[in-house]
Amino acid sequence: MVKICCIGAGYVGGPTMAVIALKCPSVEVAVVDISVARITAWNSDVLPIYEPGLDEVVKQRRGKNLFFSTDVEKHVSEADIIFVSVNTPTKTRGLGAGKAADLTYWESAARMIADVSKSDKIVVEKSTVPVKTAEAIERILTHNSKGIKYQILSNPEFLAEGTAIEDLFNPDRVLIGGRETTEGQEAIKALKAVYAHWVPEERIICTNLWSAELSKLAANAFLAQRISSVNAMSALCEATGADVSQVSHAVGKDTRIGPKFLNASVGFGGSCFQKDILNLVYICECNGLTEVANYWKQVIKVNDYQKNRFVNRIVSSMFNTVSGKKIAVLGFAFKKDTGDTRETPAIDVCNGLLGDNARLNIYDPEVTEDQIKRDLSMKKFDWDHPFHLQPMSPTSTKQVNVVWDAYEAAKDAHGLCIITEWDEFKKLDYKKIFDSMQKPAFVFDGRNIVNAEKLREIGFIVYSIGKPL
Ligand code: NAD
Ligand code: UGA
Image (cartoon, rainbow, N blue to C red; front, side):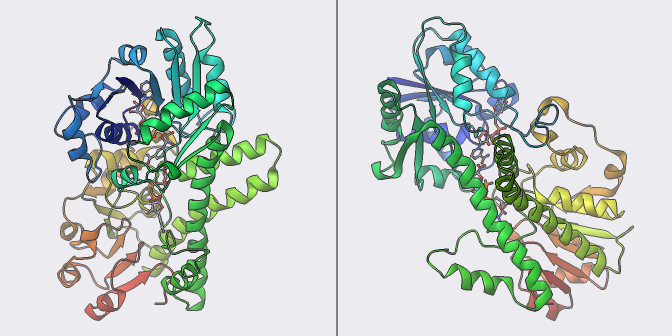
């Protein structure tokens, strides 16, 4: 029986390994983590992450060929294939701070593998890492030269949160990069055999190591660039009277462009787009490619501009001040169908409004009060460095009220802003909401999910992204 161990039981490690266990009953899969709380949750009825379809997959295989454990060393030493799926955040201090990837977690995992291994291993980079990381990892793994052979593969993950299980069941492609030596090709074959249990062969792409590492950063950069492109257009639409949904539709009908990922929004969030682009920018700069670095930097600048624009629009339309006004914030997660708040635009919007002294009533169906308050008090990039979390600032504590219902959030509010596109926000009784709000009642739709015309008939003043008033 092939034994797989995955270091890192997070948003990627957990779902990916659960699906491998489901699709490959002949493979034993152990997911390990240094976080006792996370592993305890994976072994309980309430999994540590919310992801549609995940519960069923875990329940089917847990205790059979899928195990979650904190005994990292035991499972690593027994495994044939070791996936490393630890966090690779943006550095907050030292060389490259604010841009470069912090590989501390990766390096400590690699050192541990080298220390406990007693047999040859295939080590798979599942985390998103800078190009050429495999070379550094190889050096760490072989530093104590016990005669053990390691093959490093790059097998980046392309799943999106909220659709992780669907994406893993039916991936557009699986990418495996390895050394162009006989041993490297053998290792690629072994990993390919795992995915071949359910992924059609033509969708498994094999490349050299550096192409695989760079393709992951490139894919995220291209995706984020599409959103910044449509968001840049949304500003022009607001200035000219064009409607961004109509523009997106017309542009996306060109089969060379395609219709997906062209929804204008309050800005993209999530743990990876910004981090991976900053990482790409840093690599370009290190290679003296200033123009290329500046090109990609602009994707983030436009995203920041879009979030600021949203806040400014709220403040300016509410007679240039939100001081003391109650604003209902609907949605805090970075997208629907996840409880993940990493880099969510909600943080910037809420902090912008708090900066102008607003009072916030926040509601999200999947995000806890603790999480929201922690997010609003943390410094940029600190969220992915669990060891130096900041305490909650007193101002935000007073001005933020987390509630468990959209109607409750809207009560007595002067304005309502929609940050996450949860389906339930499309179906709310907006007449009831209007009646409970202060007048004039404003709606700022950061996702273009409400029917603005109908809301205007009720009496709301509605601002949608990239649409005429
Ligand atoms: P995460 O923070 O949810 O999970 C990482 C886990 O690794 C944590 O539970 C942490 O405790 C554990 N860990 C850190 N160091 C460890 C060590 N030395 N030994 C054992 N456990 C350790 O992160 P994630 O969202 O799963 O992302 C992991 C990687 O995958 C990142 O590089 C990310 O860029 C990439 N990625 C993420 C997504 C996504 O949707 N979240 C998608 C594709 C790729
Ligand atoms: C993204 C990629 O889609 C995955 O392929 C990749 O594996 C992952 O990053 C990663 O490396 O972490 P994810 O961040 O989970 O996945 O979610 P997306 O669906 O890509 O959405 C990212 C952000 O863009 C969200 O805030 C979303 O609301 C926003 N978005 C997306 C828009 O504003 N408009 C769109 O048209 C699409």
